[in-house]
Image (cartoon, rainbow, N blue to C red; front, side, top):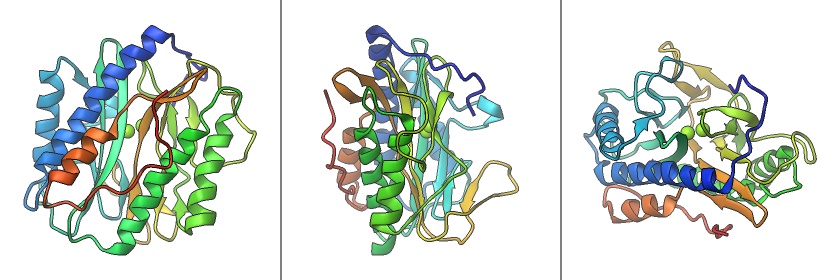
Length: 280
Ligand code: MG
Ligand code: MG
């Protein structure tokens, strides 16, 4: 999606500004986690998210981006990503991935979290847990001197070889900064030691999208919503990550989201994400 191939490395001050945008995204996702219950609709969440982002002095990144009509994307069950919010009420067996972006002080933030209602079965919860772990496994490879392909390979290797699930190939993570989608693309599959070399100041959104069985996807007639062709459960977790000489620095923060998920009786407890402890 990034049209310009130039990678814009960020200064320390720019990374700190991006931390603010990403914290707002994380707080929005946490707030939405308090609102999720059966009967609520994606349209309602979208309105609440937009209000929350604007009340905090920011602008929803998605609204108007490539013509996107909403401030969040709500991808339910077999929907992988890019689900447009609808008026269909959530039910207690739904898996709901919410992707959110906010533009604050000249920089975008981008993060996604997949919430599971209490009736979601064990098989789908395992896909969720694997996807979330693969995100942190990918982040661990975001180090100066590595290449982008090292991140891609690590995610694919864990998901396909170790877990037996399928990585979606057509959609990727991306550089992020003053533009929402910047270079480089960060695929969730690939070869080690391939792609651009990772340098200090790189900021990328890493976002594994994982299907239960078949990696193949289809786009619904709305032109946006991407679904797993086989109709099975799928998950998506995303962090924006800066690379410094000290290692990866996760700018978004799912601990806020996990806290509200834990406190919401309509949702499963958050899946483990402790392979990488974050913070440098
Ligand atoms: Mg996103
Ligand atoms: Mg993204």
